[in-house]
Length: 396
Image (cartoon, rainbow, N blue to C red; front, side, top):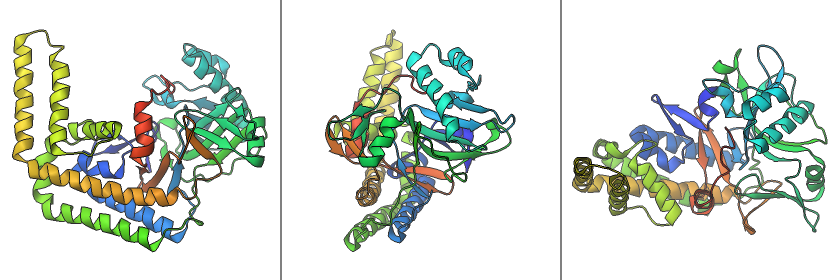
């Protein structure tokens, strides 16, 4: 289990550094050899999970809700509260009543309104003990009643639609939430997060809720798909084994969650282009030119130019290492996409659309050795998400 403060911002701690929950293919470009080993372990665990047809917290569906809600009964006082991730700010914002919400979130009326609805209705279903995290999927006024009888809501990028009896439950509910974490500890600040939800939530017509567990029992993980997964994992392993002594060390200056390799990969997703060493060099040059345009002295410009020249020379000198790292990145991504495409066969009880076009779920999360790794088809959802302006300050 990981520290509550770290997880609440969808972050994990790796050797003292905090980074967002990673795509498996990004782990080696963030954490080098250790990142590769974790990515391999996470993907192999997910593959075995699908193969055996499990339904448990080891593999969950990722929901595109907003805001993230922390709620439950305070471990010291037993009093119910709701919060966003700002419950764990230096000056925490924990809301036990509407006055607390007005004090902490009064400058954001839409958020405050949603929190008040959650405060009023979630106690109707929440177990009497425990602190939980979930995604708010809708609140009063967010649900669209469609002519075909379905009910739709769009908390962020994806529009979710419920059908049949499930649609009736959504239409009648005042709030909807997907619960995906439970926390353990004697004080909120020291709690540990676990994807296993031990206590059962009650049923009430005012609250539509579900867990994030994903049922793989009806998923067809074909021999051909298993062979493709194995092929790409073996190819990635070969690159790792043959070049690990030089590849990770040579590319280290540009690793890390906020390093040029990571930001470049996001750019390639956004622009739908294949990553390359030449593209990385251009990415670094473009970013430097933006910085230079804001510098006020010639001395500052020359210093920046010298830094960039040194970086580009380093990449050119170690071009083979960068080529190999990006090659491995692609193989891991392709292995992951085999799993995602297999999991997408069973999208759960809701249908998904982005701007009217039918799509798949946002993705899935595999929990390996206490750390979550997200399995997302970046060409589909991540690109749409990166291109879309997210709701501002939704979790503030």
